[in-house]
Length: 502
Image 1: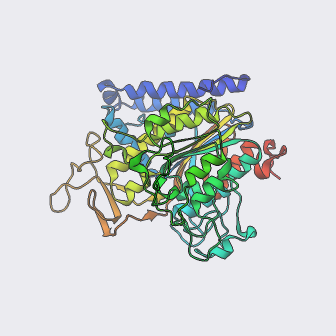
Image 2: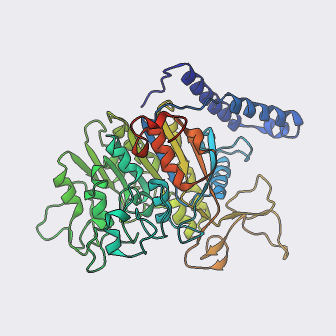
Image 3: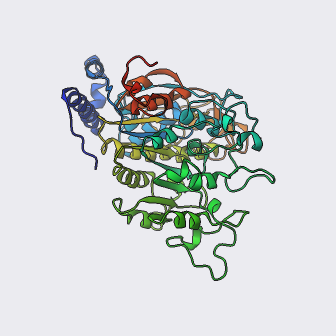
């Protein structure tokens, strides 16, 4: 565990305020019938508001250098998803949802809203947004790490260096920071890939079109200029690293590669995992939860963990008696423990990818449970790092059109039916979607997959320069604030600590 040790007076105040905030919140969240009765008095609301006001007035912006950065990305996690996750968490703890029922991300002291459009769309996809929040430049939907002047799918243009954009992960590596990614999606998914890949098509996971000289995304992750330097890679996507013939007759199996996950789809017949392990002698590969939990963070140089063929299984669909996949909290803990050994700090990107995947299928209950699991990883980090020198931020790439509607009582389960009636005197789902298959939860427009939405998404932050994330910002500002806080990229060489940015 990284200790929370105040290094000066202001730090002590900041640390004390944060601890007080968590303590007050936790106390209120224990709740009882007394609180319900108190809500019916004016004194309760004025007292609660005064507590919040005092905390806000007491906050001292941290203008120190961020030695470490933990970037949490809730894929598809708009404001409704955060609110829904908070309500469901209250239900699970046996409480009625109230003003003091908050997720860990909502307890971070600074917050704002982020604009998400892409070059060619009001509503973005995860590739364009990844390029924006990791590289600081907007691009077209479907493209990674490239300028918007490149047409989607243009292989030749993607190879031209002037069209390729450096990411905040590359900036971190250039300053000797250790880097890593954790995701419940494929590690080749658009959200993390914007940090290490330059691809004219986000779906070139394990192959590119005939005649195209570009590297596929899996190749770029393990052997590219940025991906090859990562210390920790944990998530899904195993099939894109292996050939269909693995293991070939007489071929020795890779240690820790279990049989149930070992069918590959690579057309070039390459075994990227074997190539990676041979190129990095002190690296370790794991493919199950048990193997991951046995890793000694102090003895491994690089860790590659691929736990499913594609995305990891939804939390609600996992068999508790036979679960071979780790949780996002467990992956994050191992990543933090390894990266904490870095002599010059670290940058960790953590994605809750299944929030989005569930919304696409209109599986609201699954998605909100993924929000809660994602938040557990945030809580782990908040209880582990020192906010004195670690910047923690939480945001989303885009939103989904999920709606929490009607006038249900606070005692009603958010994932069920409303206790109010429609025009036909029938109950209806509290949660609904404008688009999608409409099987688990209703949708207005029938589509095979629910569409993203264009509204701003929330951002929460704590640590050095976290106050810069307040207000309404564009997603391209995010990596620039990170770089300024950590003195990397365009802000290295002392420029980062100036109040006036030149």
